[in-house]
Structures are given as structure tokens and as C-alpha cells.
Image (cartoon, rainbow, N blue to C red):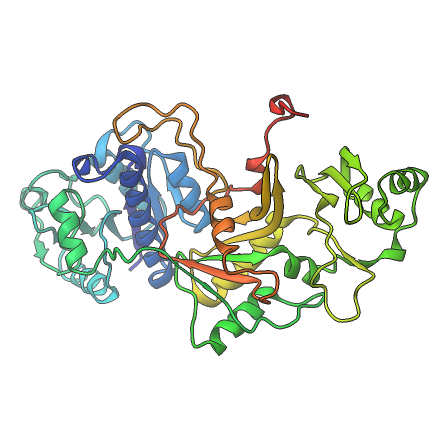
Length: 456
């Protein structure tokens, strides 16, 4: 008998309101999304052969669900959680499913054996309720999908049992240890933490040693996986992999000899003015849309351009360091599409380890009005580039009107502490950091419109 599975998920901005005394707005939203992605990933991993849908009013949640190849269902005017469950029952019936498992998205620990027990019990009785500690219904299995009207809310386990009796159907209430837990109140949060469901271990960073010399056509996800295996490690879901642009460009055959760039008249003119090799100037021009600053300066002239991807940087990001033995007359250009590069690495790693796994491609940029270089993100996959806090409040309830944390840049900068120029460590793993899988994210999200460039 076909079992359809439906996950009910509120708008994360409106979820977990009973945790206001313990968590700020952004933390509650992040928690809701983490729990949802955990639930979605569990059913995709252990029940990938079953029809899976997410019922939600949130386009952000729907986007995440689609990225996991789940059906997304709006509530079609049906209000509240029972309206969402009704919508799930309509969907299950429309695809010919004989049974429907409806489950909330806030169960911190899902165990395959418990879900199997729930589904198996549904072979014997038409209504099976997985009861929560407070008498609610964290999951319900109905045969057929519209066997009884849904009665979610306080004391819903008893309400569902009463609805079954009214319909002349048998109901079984199960007390399964993990399915009994949800996170609605500060007490739930503390209980989950002490039970090991939520671990407050902080964030850890470590470099991946043993990445070999990368050449054109090499599979970076395979190289990273092998190096991790040699270290006796592996990636875990929600790890973020930071990859230096240099090995990405090498793998994508973006290394060229200086002589491949025949200087134009303009390149020769600029080269004479600032004291830079005319061939390198031609390479820079080929990668740029504008020259913003050019002057004679040690060691070989200053040339600041707008790269065709939008970045404002020295020499259009073209590099000559750490290219390998005998490659002093070579130039390494930025990847053609760093977001696509990050997406390929993400796909390869998730094939090996599951997911979600975030990937950030970084390069080292200077900064206006400040000495020193930092790693910045030039390509992202999964992790958001910029997080919009303009609809949130600060710790004292004051509205934030212009707060846009550059999340991926902060990750990149942190990785730079381990990606030292002489270390030969082009890959860093960040573990334990909460983040929301964002399929639509792009490093282009960092770019200001030209109308906002006040100093150019």
C-alpha cells in the first residue's frame, strides 16, 4: 500500500512564538528552519521511495523543499495547522495513496525504527497517533488519507482518538520516545539540550591536509573526500566547505602562459604608464569591464579594475603566486562562474556524504581605506551570501533598518586564519554553525548597484 508523507511547516518567521522568552527572533527562525531541514532530510534519506510533500505558506520553505525534490503545497485558503493537514489529505488522495503520514517539522530527533513502527501499526488499524509528551499529536497515520477529520491543537491525541470513535474506526496511540519530543517551550528546549538532541558545542574550523597538486580536469570533490579519508575524517550534514579560488581555477583550466596575451595598443600604453608587463595588462583588460585606478607603484604598478563578474579588485583577480614549479611565466584567472564551481563541488560532496553541505569559493582581496588582505566569497552554493535582518529587531526590540550581515564573507574571512599563503591548505571545513540552506544564493548578492557607488 502506498504511504504518502506530508510535513507541515509554518512560516519560520512566525514559528516558535512560545520560545520568545528564551530566544530572539532570528534564533527562533533559525531553529525552526534547522528542525524543518532535519525532518525533510530524514524522510528523503530513509523514505526516498515514498511520495513526499511539504505544506507551507512560506515561499522560502517551499524553495528549500523543491531543492530536496519534495512536492510543495500551499494551503489553498485552508487556515491553520488543520487546514494544512486537510490540504495534505487532498494531495494524497489525488495521487492515489492509500495511506497518509502527517508529521510536524519540529521533532529534533527522528529514528528510522520508530517511523517504521508507526507505519507498520498502520497496517493493523486505520488511525495511528504518535503522541507527544504534552498530549498532542506529533504525527498521525491515516488509512485512507481522509479517514477522520484532523484535530491538531492542545490535547489533540485524545481529540483524534475521539474523532476515530465517532467515525467507527479503531485508533492506536503510540508513545515512541523520540517522536514524543518536540520543541515548543523553553522547557522543551532545555530538555532537548540535556537529552543530546541539541548540542551547544560552538563552531569549529579545521584545514584539510593532503590536498594534492590540482590540475586541469581534476575532480575537487573527490580530492577533498580522499584527503578527508586519509585524515580519518568525513563531512557531516551542515558542514560548510571553504575552497580557495586557486585550486578551483586550476581544476577548470584557467591557467595561461603570459605569451597567450598579445598586448593591444591600450595595454602597451597602460603598461608604459604604470610599469607593468604589457602581456599581464592585456590579460587584466580581457577580464575587466572598467579601469578604475592606474598608477606607477611598487612592485609592478597599481591597476584596479571592475572584473566582468562585478568585483572591484587589483589586477582583475589574476594571480601568479603558488602556481607550481616552473610556472613563473603563467597567469591564473578567476573561474568563469564561481557560483557554478561551488555548486559542482557541493553536488559531488553531497553525493558522497549526504547533505546539506554548503560550499564557499574564496579569493584574497584588499580593502578600501584599510591595510591588509582578507579572504572574501566569490562563489557560494547552499549558504546565503547576505542575510537580511532589515525586518528583525535588535536585542532591545528596536527595528533594524539597514542590517545585512555578509554571512559568506564572514565564513571566508574566518577560513583565512588557516589558509595561510605558505601552508598549502586550500580547503577549510567549518562545523557547528547554524545556517539555512539557500538554493538561490549567489555571490552576486554582494554587489551594490552602480547607483550606490559613492566613491567611484
